[in-house]
Image 1 (cartoon, rainbow, N blue to C red):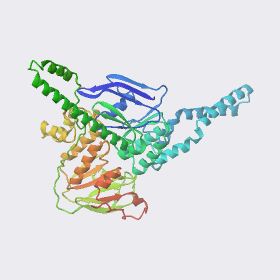
Image 2 (image 1 turned 30 degrees about the vertical axis):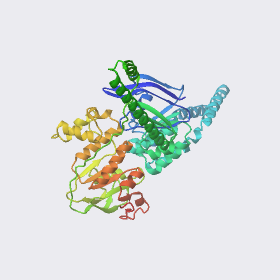
Image 3 (image 1 turned 45 degrees about the vertical axis):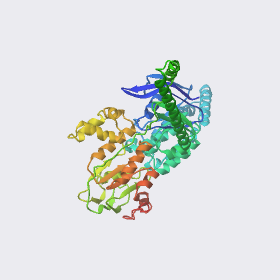
Image 4 (image 1 turned 60 degrees about the vertical axis):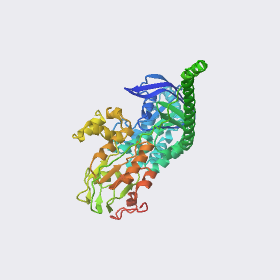
Length: 533
């Protein structure tokens, strides 16, 4: 047994997160940790990593177990290169190699037999140790994982400070995979990966010899890599053997069984109450009625079955537009200091649902930031119709002040809104009164995403520009978001790594990768209408 958690309880103010929760992690278990946004998935990980102390309960790891955690908010040294950072995974071995080289230098400079004998033994021992740990194959090992995650195309000498948030997370993931801990903990690892590298990660995890625990709302991904599902629901932790599809079957059966038990108990309770009401006043049956009262008191009443799903309701503030030709792009080059891609030219009609695809780091987010005016084009132009109004969903959680509450965040943007109206719109995206009054920094990733959706919902717009809007959202919230975006009468330009989301929403697809196949053949961008509905 790698981990045993017993009677885990934790509350934040008035909200109970866990109540006497129990679970174990056994050898060879590949675990998917699931649950709706805000139920406590990230909190549980922080408890396991020692960052949060529970109110009560015990967390017992097996002795000498090595835990590795992919932290999406990890601070790293921005002044070192990708290669230097990845080599930190084997710092002890590189230190031993350095030591070995120093001994060899001494050997080359001395003729003292005693010293020679001593350093020959030392170098021999170090060399044997390095060989045993495949030190001399580390460079190829690093290159293999870096290539698999698409990191090598950034340039291994590139400083971490020059990488985007998603690129940094890929590098952090690579280092973690290189370390090969006994228990690998990954929090939403597919959020910053494109489909090619998700496929690579799937293959890697299938072959991974250690245990892992993955938090993910990507059902397809979980179905491929896990053999156990752990679900957090209503302050309890429930374990299901099998992949995600097996979990769905078992969950449905468990719910059906509970509903049947509940109905059976309700019938029994009603029968007892009916008998007591009819017979307690009669002398001949009073004792029997009393007996049934005692039986009724001993019954542990089951809670009425209820869904833990939290739906979101997005009523976008749409401003109608008359023009059909909504956006025209001419010979546009994008980048920061130099062009990332060849020139691109295209136009889209009003009401189009345009998916922008391509591998991670190719320039999808850069294109979106150019279209919203945050970045200046290297050359060329883009023109929205005169009455275009843009609402932008940024991929990263960048709030100006993380100490503010959602109530304060919305009030600062819309000072004329009263508190009741603010509470109502926050409730529409699943942020209840309790969550509305908590600092943004204490909210889960999914809850922060819902706050961002609330902000763009309130903004008067006729084009939504969305950069990975499904990141951090649970299954129900994703389905709701998809429904409302399909109903939205305006234009949607979006980036997503989720195939199902793209296939369900997009009426047109712009694959940026196709620009690279004919670099220099400017203006011939790929614009795929096969998703037109």
